Length: 131
Image (cartoon, rainbow, N blue to C red; front, side, top):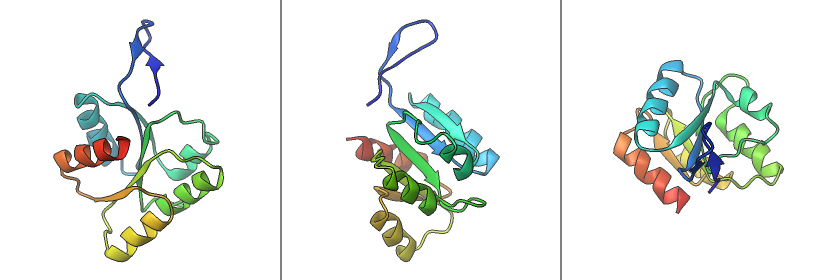
């Protein structure tokens, strides 16, 4: 887990999540919900924006949407794993199928969560992934 410092200089040991989601409404609502549950969260509008950071995200867990323009969630995780970035990652998708789940797991995701997400199920998946 990353130990960060808040703007006032106090240590902060809350887990830092990185959310990569192209739907602004989903991104906003998930961010508000997860912050209310005590998580720090950084957001990116798409996989391309995230990958431009060259892997310097500093997150404890990645939440990556599957269907995004240009670079989908599977491609994001493939590129991260090729860079030896082993940050735990959860795929979020509105296009769930057992085939997609198997593809996600075989490419390095820890789990797959279906959209619309059930808040308590999402938190449990995040906690399980972090532990």
